[in-house]
Image (spheres, helix red, strand yellow):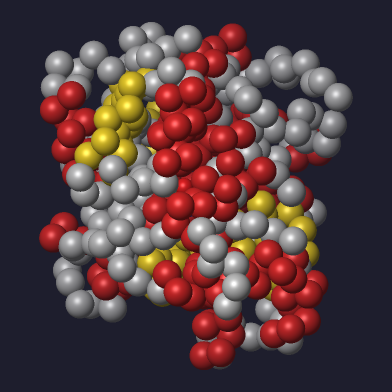
Amino acid sequence: MLFPPEVATSLLTVLECSRCHTPYDAAHPHTVSACCGVPLLARYATAAAPPRTVLPGREATMWRYHELLPLLDSAHRVSLGEGFTPLFPLPALAARYGLRSVLLKDEGQNPTGSFKARGLSMAVSKARELGAAGCIVPTAGNAGVALAAYCAKAGLPATVVMPRHTPVAFREECYWYGADVQLVDGLINDCAARVRELNAAGHLLDVSTLREPYRLEGKKTMGYELAEQGHWQLPDVLVYPAGGGTGLIGIWKAFREMQALGWLPAHARLPRMVAVQALSCCPLVETLAGRQPNCQHYQGRPTIANGLAVPRPLGEALMLQVLAESGGTALAISDEDMLVGMRELARLEGLFVAPEGAAVWMATRHLLATGWLQPHEEVLLLNTGSAQKYLDNVLGRYAA
Ligand SMILES: *Cc1c(COP(=O)(O)O)cnc(C)c1O
Ligand SMILES: [Zn+2]
């Protein structure tokens, strides 16, 4: 079925420094806040928002929440049908481990095969609205593919800078969309350095994670969907694979916005948020454990979960704040264990999840074994991507 675009309105008011709350005019492009050098957050006139009863019947994409999205004119919308991904129970896994309820939101069903579609749909739409000449991104893989696709749709040039060791499917797809692909020896932080060189003149809009405020707004729609698809009941625990952290920060932002909107009760109990990382790149886990003051000097190594190979996330402080506010935690999973999780999800539930999604399931098993998660609690797994692009990393590993 085809849905006509909604007559969209946005209640965006200002951008705000995430540390000191200084407001910035959203009519201009921004990077991090000029005052503190930290991410900017979009704010909305929540008091003017409609009740949640307007939602049923709206289009089955993330744009159904347009009042709480920053695009001012829907003529600039660049959409490939992102969002409103399925949320379903995993009864076989739950039964095997004695859990009452395990739910999975399958972001692998998004355009270009990952939840990066949400953020890049939004960022490229805003790039168009703000008159950008093109976009550039450092990426571990999925963000680059999504940027390339949405820029193709928007008729904007895209430059994608990714590690040379990224599975071939990621860069091939970028070429098909006509993107300029640059390969770099190293991880995403090395790609970020290359982006700064390539874009020294600032002709392109740099859509690096949390360096512009709009990818976060796309990703937060996962939080809105979780509430709406769960009939406004949230799970006890939400397990998320954290790299740059936009998903974790965005989902929490959505929960807080829905409380302000009255879509959730002001004192609703929110899920404990769990950030899952890869053992070979787990800066958040190290900082949380007090083994380093912050991630600024953390050295990461590659992992089969490419999206988790983010050694120095700009959003570290915001992620830690989400974990603290929600009573959550962070833990790291080895690549070998991710393969175990991929096999289990594939064989018991028919899901070919990205290693990041498998890490989330293995983290859940660990939290259950240690008693942090109780069998009667409802746990929600976010599978952020499809395994199909990761075949180079997991070829032949289907047998234990
Ligand atoms: C980018 C990515 C992540 C990490 O997401 P953040 O929101 O940056 O923390 C996790 N999984 C997959 C598949 C990704 O592509
Ligand atoms: Zn500030």
